[in-house]
Amino acid sequence: MTPEEFRQHGHQVVDWVADYLQAVERFPVLSRADPGEIRAQLPSRAPVQGEPFAALMRDMEEIILPGITHWQSPNFFAFFPCNNSGPSILGDLISSGLGVQGMLWATSPACTELEAHVLDWVVQMLQLPRHFHSDSQGGGVIQDSASSATLCALLAARERASGGETNRRGVGRPLVAYTSDQAHSSVEKAMRIAGLGSQQLRRIGTDEQYAMRPETLADAINRDRQAGQTPCFVAATVGTTSSGAVDPLPSIGEICRRENLWFHVDAAMAGTAAVCPEYRFVHAGLESADSYCFNPHKWMFVNFDCDCFYVRQRDALTQALSILPEYLRNAATESGSVIDYRDWQIPLGRRFRALKLWFVIRSFGVEGIQRVIRRHVALAERFAEWVEADSEFELAAPRALNLVCFRHRGGDSINQQILDRTEKSGALYLTHTRLDDRLVLRLSIGQLNTEQEHVYRAWRLIQRAVREDLPFVEG
Image (cartoon, rainbow, N blue to C red; front, side, top):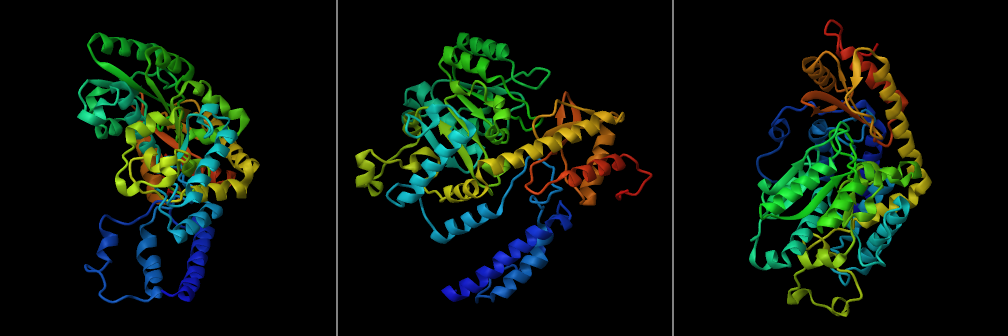
């Protein structure tokens, strides 16, 4: 493809994406493709000769698009959002065009320095603790996801607890980690990858708000010490996946300080809310954390993947992850005056992710981001009011920012019916969880273009899905 051909097809692709985003509301939110349907339409062998670009775009329309679940639809209320925006897409496009491999400062200084700088902006925007700023002993790095951030934090905790012996000799002492029974599954996966094992993860019970019980945590740590185990890591959650619960960071942090445990805080979804001063209560107690992460690719309009991960002591992280073979040695690294982000993550190579975050913050501005966050929270509050006003429905947990957990009072079967009928319709997409062993419906409001009309329509369709004697249409 020549530069001129690239220019021509590039304009075509940008137009296609713009048209898609403009029309996304018209598609069924959840793909209606059957298992294997997409692959059945693809040739069994790669083409021997190159094909014209028009053939690729035709197959995008006819084969790929019908197999897409439309995460950018304003009627997407499932899981947590995975957002994008025009500025983010364009920043990512430039990143792809530059093709930077940012493993070292020397391999592209702007990649490293922009990342450190924009992450310092985020510290200011969210009023995070000063020790997460790059001019302290800590700092931030962009990971692909909160799962990777949790794993990196656990590895740093493992090495600190073992005095570096685990990296040299493997896991010897029985190290133990703790998290709530509502925490994300990535904590257990990290335990497996880190070689500590699922059985060494203690799932701490939660209270009536589904938040970790500090006294139960303290008891578990004491029991493990008495049994000859070595506690090393606690993962707290700000905004659990099931209900949006916020663990009591001040109390947990005090326990971690007393017991000398690494304290990690996962705010993957809810962390973005702290850009608004009135929602910064979610971070109360964060000053005790050794590490922290949240995902701009969820609620800050940055397309996947982009997780902001911060540590109090960067040396604790780099000592766990750094290996310096001869072929990576260079004058800048040897000087000790630069950051080499390869030492802050699992893989060696890394993309120029900071560009899209930079583009979004500069394009929206802090006030623009705040306006959208506040609108989403207000819409969730309105939806919760509709649920409470309907005698057939109830809230299953307190509304948590932009997440509403609710259920029909008729029991699990009728709630499953609501899920099935809404999913089949394609008009909206909900997901579920279980709280107190009851099936609970989740409605998460976070897509950039979701307005009250979309939330009200979703509520009317949810109400209608209860009536099997009525066709599932609006009305």
